[in-house]
Length: 567
Image (cartoon, rainbow, N blue to C red; front, side):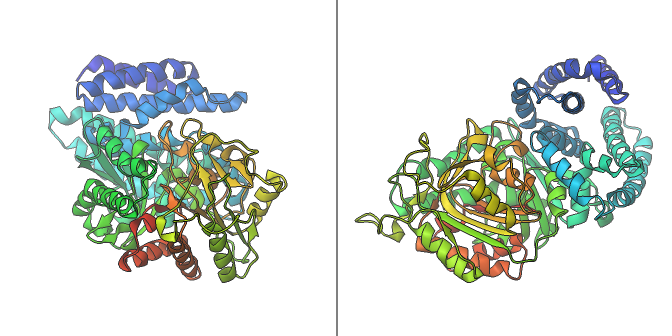
């Protein structure tokens, strides 16, 4: 271990924690360089300390920009994503997995983070007492940390001393944030706390085990975070040998290449999807459940970092059963978003909005209209059909041919778009409903994610939606293509319709990772989902619908793309 690098990082980090913001930008770049060098030489502890310094510098820069009313520097985001792709795994290898949680939360808490915090400040204060809950968590963790520190102090292993020092530093950071939040006269501090404070709070409030999946250069890791009151170890981790960055790229391409190639054979598509489900189980769920069998049948929140979000983690096959059918599973962009989404009570006034549009140009998906009509009839509301299909399915095709929802080419807003009023009219209707169902084309834009769009009358871009608040606690069902793809260009919480809709006030979002078929089988699946929603929370309702479709032999292309996001 290089003592000089270790001491320099500690000094810079200490100055930052004392309020010396002048070191933030230098520490950002120096810590990143140190991380790259030390990680490449398997100096896991120093590399983790460098990553912690980087995350603290990032937080300071973010706060500086907020105080000055400036946007966060876009040129820094690629460095953040590069760190997010590897820092969690390095923390796992250092033997201090709690550092991985802190890094995951700090590196994903950008762009939508301020919106989430501002929303919680306006809605939660006065309805709950978050400081009281944080004081309870703090007292429990303080006792756990004292026990841990006593054990470390009694260790005579000199080689382990650097790891012990890093662990003490990480635990102290978490306790400092919890203590500050619990002691503040203003409850607003609770809403701007750093590190995994919100993740710990979210695990406690939702009674879910929080599992971070982090890739690495040659392997990845799963980091498990538990609420203190469970009596389990707060944080532990395991190696996932198949979760390397190269392996993730290969797995993600398996399905996407087939679905975007124009392949018309349903059997070929179904085989590609099934292979992806089996591979996701082999890579993630089999080692996770072997190490932690107590997770079976419980409530789990999965936080996939970086390219892990491209895997079908929600519907991976354990034997012949989707994992979401054997546990109450949800996927969240961060522990922060889990806690904030969970704070919203679900609306109970029955306000529903159902809409469909078979538009884009000649690429009609007429079954979307039938889907919206059937769902609306079940929910006893009138659907909004933004355009009627021109006729039956093209000659030689049937519902069994798997016409796919989704458009990838350049969007001309005038092509095939009728005069349906302003975007604000539609978004305003969305904002009033506690349950939203949209059946339409989707247009993912990985290069400029905020321009990803739902094709409802015209391209309804993510950037437009972010100007509107949803009904607090709403459930949103996106029966459109590939809009649950969180993205891979920046840290996970920044991108994707699920993260955006959670930031807008939704509690639950159901969406698809891949293009989905425009078929009668999709209508049946959506009807089953909405029947389940009458008596179960969305994460359970979706898991049951997927489990039923799988058990009845329905093609995987129908149910496998879907996942539940939120609380």
